[in-house]
Length: 488
Image (cartoon, rainbow, N blue to C red; front, top):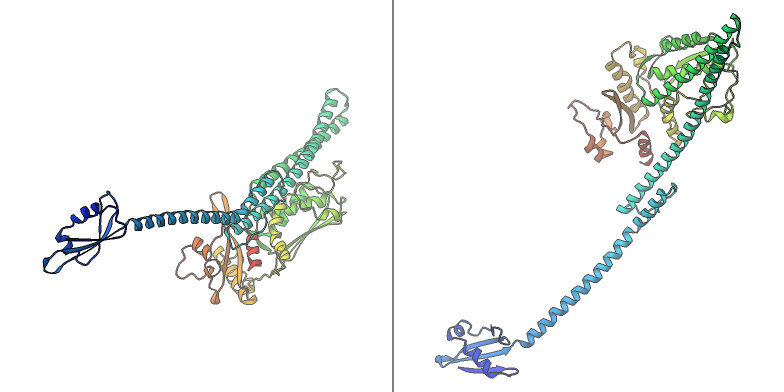
């Protein structure tokens, strides 16, 4: 066996020892194929090439130390680790900068929230791009802050009115109580003598008691209205209701000539009979209070395709211009002084019709705000055939005067969308649902084309023969629907 070494030969003896460990079988196995000779931890490894000589004379083995290669590999490993570590640091810094830039609006959110919590309800966030999560969050928070500010302003105004109301109520209740106590003291002390003076004293005590009773009744009525703000929509015979209100007014104060003028003996509408009764009764009471005895009061009612009109007219002094814009505010009094005039009444400024008026006027206000023309339609065929809630079944009236009328209106005006309100009774409470959908040709409704996420959420089960698909949007208000129409 011969030995040929290449490179730095520092320990020929150790090399000979390693090479001597190579058996002829290994040489035959690796003949002309390089392999690594492991030193077993006693030094450097070697890369070896061995070949058998012809005629079994021996073999030739060439070996090269891997010390330089291993040093180069170690240096490369260290370099790769160092560069990788530096790259991670740089990427981390870049990511942190990007995150800081992206979340910078959240710092503004924190500052705005702190300012809002300290009472600055006008604080708002700087608008950001709405195609990012932070931008959408900013927009939603600004809307929330605006609504909170509006709600707080309403709350403050309501509290101010309530304080004024409590002060007025206390004053108005104290006045008859003081009078009753004074009259009672006079009678107890014997200051009133004679049957005629005693009768007059008792009459005045009775008058003050009636006045105080009227105050208490108004307070109870206000409490009942707060407990049941929803209107109960039901068929109302308006002619009969007006006659009942007028008879009650005549019985309470038979001091005026009250006449009734009805366009037709059969005036029907869907509404809350109690609220309508309250409206007419309040207007009649005001007319009786603020006009001279013997004056004429006219209660009239008429209908057209748009609405039902009820009027209570008199020849009283009217309402000042500065008070006309505020007469429907709750607790508002046209006369701000607490000094009572010769007119009767509680003087509390309790508007028992404000909820009714507010619900009826909402659509007109929204139409004016968004410059939208409101058009109505009545199924004249149903009117000609005498279809009313009283002459037919409720389902037939709904089919003819609502469903068919809606289809006629859609064909007549060419509407692309329709909105409406629906209520369902749940035990003792009424939950209002909002209806919104899009119409296709043939009166088919396809809400999926308008709001697919709402369709997936609210789509109810329907029968195969149903063509009108209606679904509730419980968390939408009517204002949301108007805003959505304006946007799209």
